[in-house]
Length: 271
DNA sequence: ATCCGATGTCAAT
DNA sequence: TTGACCTCGGATC
Image (cartoon, rainbow, N blue to C red; front, side, top):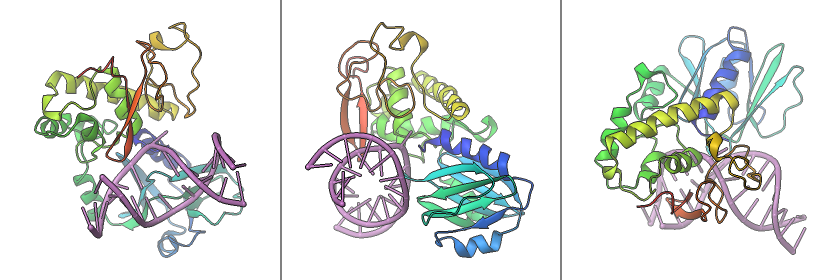
């Protein structure tokens, strides 16, 4: 689930269900019990996301810092709360709703200062307000780097919130070879990529899934068999290895890059 | 019943 | 570059 759009959506959903009221905070699994006891009964005052990091603000200056990692999951539900299972790291509950967090890489109580340190080490996030966000800072790093653009897009210090799906899809949409060095990306190309990510990821927050296929390229529009993608979104290349490209019909390729699966169409994304 | 992979990241090598 | 961590659903036996 978790690329930046998921986390921004969670910030909105946690906020909508729990801000402004006393919240019951527990850690059925036990790994967050001490902090949960400190916060239990206090008010969730605000929620925020930066890249893949989620911040739940309690009272004036207490924050729960959550990072889902690869496996973390969040489940919302209506009251009454069901008995928790033993993997629930954090449960919030009030009279009307509950929400469970399982399997996160991080769930920790932090201060304002610690939170600021996290913002400081993250790059610009296409989903944060423009006044907080400088895509030029990302381009400065990219244009000085011999690292591949595929790796740079996954580097959260360069740009925050892009994961394996948006990386593959945005490079496809711009016809860019994932192995191209960052320094060979033109300002116009970066501009187009950034603008596209803003649009795609906002749509992702709205729909809570990743869709990247333009209407004119859907299988129906192209007269091809309907898609069989199994990850809840309509995409060009992600997890479509050895299947036909929606545009040219050639085979989508896959390769290992920095321990992740990369997907691209060698014909549409030429060096 | 068991295995494997996954939209992530870090530390150790 | 590899291993560790966190969880669970789908594929495979």
